[in-house]
Length: 116
Length: 115
Image (tube, rainbow over all chains, first blue to last red; front, side, top):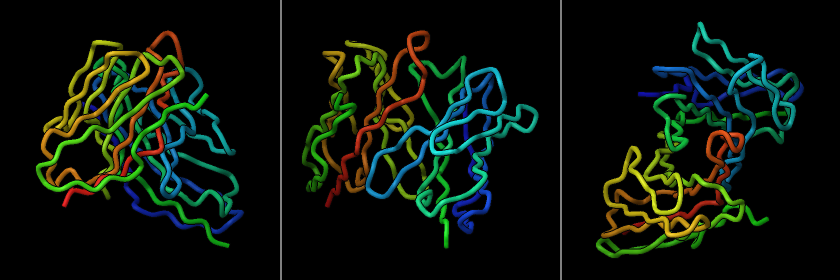
């Protein structure tokens, strides 16, 4: 079985400060990992993914994430937060072996609030 | 490209009524999925399809049916609506592994209330 944990329901950060949204995962094989963002009353938008290769992946809007296999983590980061980054962020995992049909398991989401 | 479209955007049903949520994509994606989003629970997979004529159950399939007669369309049917099916429903599509980038593209969602 595959699972994802987002330990923080909400993260507050001041504009201009770095932000981190945490994600840990569990899979029986190798993982495909994703971050999505959801603005109010909208669908999910893809931010970035880790499939293979470099552990540091860069995505849309200046976001990046680091894959850490030993800690089974895939934390989302941004060097300088913007008020417009305020949204709900979801981490998702697909097990390479058992995730046929591109079955994703999502975390419960982390609400990011960036304040002036 | 319109991407993934869903209709209706909002729906109110009475307990026991049936209805179909529509989903269509114009990206020629092989894979399509239905999720429901509930507060504090993230998104949970209801049903998915790996191509026309092929569907399978996800994590929470009870009370829902799907079919995939064309590559473009993937409707979700509620057979006899229950208050527990009050949720926001998202359709998503993606390329199959080897032909694309694995990421799923989501529709705008349907907000369903069952009274």
